[in-house]
Image (cartoon, rainbow, N blue to C red; front, side, top):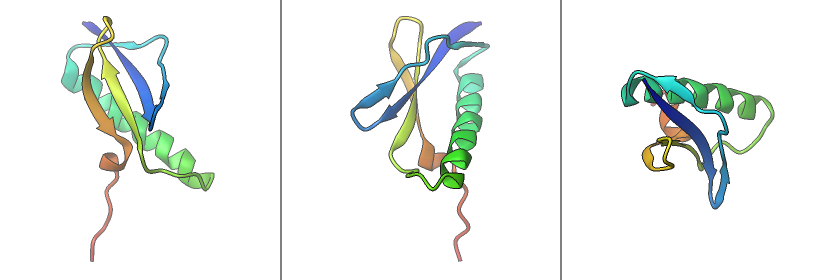
Length: 80
């Protein structure tokens, strides 16, 4: 198990995840990041807030950014 932190990047602003969570591997952490991003986006849409530009920065315990999950990439949009 490894601890990953899901910091939220919004332009120059970074909201740090102070606790992190343990996952078996990066793939499992990424699945959770996608799910969490969808939940956060749903609340933003309901509140009429901007939903473009934010991303999770998945970091290791030493602070190294090991993956990035842009919120807009987790949306499924129907194209006609």
